[in-house]
Length: 147
Image 1 (spheres, rainbow, N blue to C red):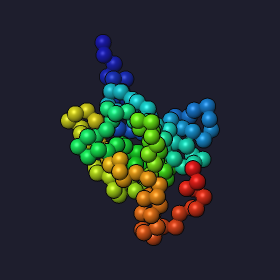
Image 2: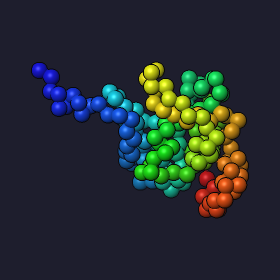
Image 3: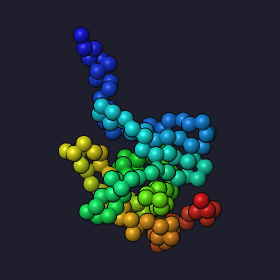
Image 4: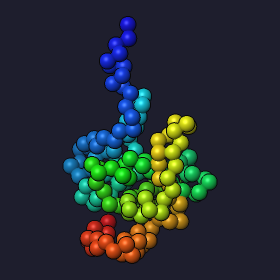
């Protein structure tokens, strides 16, 4: 007989969870979907950076861009300022605010994917993110950039 209480508790709707690691500053970011969960990266609290790896299959070819979960980027409970993505042997870096401002929002729910922001590869770069922050009137922590 099917236990509906346990069965329904397995249905989660795009929830994010921080999972401790053996390093105190480093937390795994776990995405809990309807019937599965997966780790989508790490948050380094010391460097205030979200770190992840992407493969060629993750490239959104239409816009030549890489995507990140929209709930992660808009979350008030998971704090980070910087994003570091390792892709095809290169490191792509930017800020969270720049990724959201310059990225494109897509939702592919009918294909089994959650809502995401996609930033074209040519838009990555700490210099662009820092210039964007300066032009928008924010005075960031000068030492936070030295990653």
